[in-house]
Every structure is written in C-alpha cells, then in structure tokens.
Image (tube, rainbow, N blue to C red):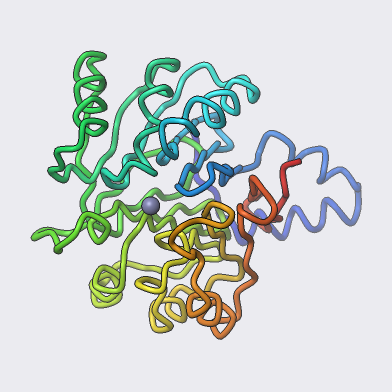
Length: 284
Ligand SMILES: [Zn+2]
C-alpha cells in the first residue's frame, strides 16, 4: 500500500541528498506526478499519472479529438487501462472523446457530475458505461477519494442543490502530492466560483486549470486571488469561435500573479512534480 510522507522532512532530505550525492535526479524518476493537459483544440482533456502508477483521465475533448489525439496519446504512453475517468459535465467538447476512449481502454470507475442532459452523444456515453458495467460514482463537494500515489484527491464542487446551467455544476477537483497542489475546474463560471469561495474547503493551488477555456464568465479576480496559482493552464482551440481566452481573463490572471500556458499556443502541456517542486514541460 502507498504510504503518505512527512513532506517537509522528505524535501529537506532530498535537498541534502542532491547536494551531497548528486543522485536526487536519478532517484526522483518513477516518483513523479505527471499532469498532461492535452492539446485537444477547443475542449478539455487532462491525464493524471500518479507516482504509484494510477492513471486518471479527466474529460477527452470532442469525438474527433478523442479518436485522433487522446486515444493515440494514451497508447503512446503505454497505458493499457484507466483507473478512473472523470466526466466534468455533459458538454460535447468534454465528453465526445470519451466514447472512443472507453471503446479502447478498460476503465476501473467513472466519477461524474451526473447532470441530466439529452444530447445523443451524452446518452450514448451513458449507455456505453452501463453496457461495460463500469462502476459510476457521483462527485459531490467534500468527497475524498483514495488514489494510490496522491496525498489527497478532493472534490470541491458541485454541491447540492445544483446551480443553474451545466457548466456551473462541473466537477472541480483538488489534487495534492507533497507541496504540489493542482486545481481542475471544468467549465465552472462565476456563480460556482463564488459558492466554492463561500464554502470551507481549501482552494489554494500552485497550478490551476483555468475554468471554461479562459471565458470571461469565469475566473473572477476574487477566485483567482484565493487560489493563488503560480501557473495557469488554458485549454482552448486556436482561433476558436468563442474568442477564448478572453482578454479580461488574461488580465485577471496577470493581476493574480500567475504565469499562463495555453494549449492553443504551445500544444500539450505537462506538469511534472516530485512532491517538493514542479516544472512545466511542453510536449513536442
Ligand atoms: Zn468546455
């Protein structure tokens, strides 16, 4: 079983080991958390690989991206199965690609918002999950899941009663590995941000997946200042029809002191953490 560490002590020891033996880099390999923000055009798809070998996929872009980007990417990494798939909310740019993914890889469980939506794609996805007998779990604020290799996997949203609009009830996750904390926000908008701010769950994070592709309807300055991200990732398509990311969002991120990385500008973005520090890698 994966044992949780005293991270402050561990990180001090790692610095010492690096200084004395210069072996920390070699040792760290295989003990890293990787978060891949895949370049799926206008949409979201995030792969989490924990240091204990668990693979979790959060959304998979639209159907075309699922076939042409996400499935080949997972295969290229040698992934044979997914421990968990997270459906943040039922919009096409998040779930379309999950159908080819579920047709290709065995999945241990699905964690989802569970909203009602009658699009053909969403219905087909739910039918596929049912046909494959994949355990389906609702995500609600305060849920903590045990994920091998992570110190914490916490659901921050949605919360009952649900808000109006599919976006606002997106699954929001906070992952902790040592001193690295990552916040994944789906497509929540200002209403959900306010509700999370008013709740008593911890929202500070080093790394933020910016909500709703950088739309101005999200990323209020109050929310960004409370999260305090050093690095922010925006997943959006180049020259998309919505004008994402909006200039107001970029201004708020700048005001909050965050460095911004955009899939539309640099492609797939990978955050690598050894629990003590992290780095942002561009996949080319
Ligand atoms: Zn979206």
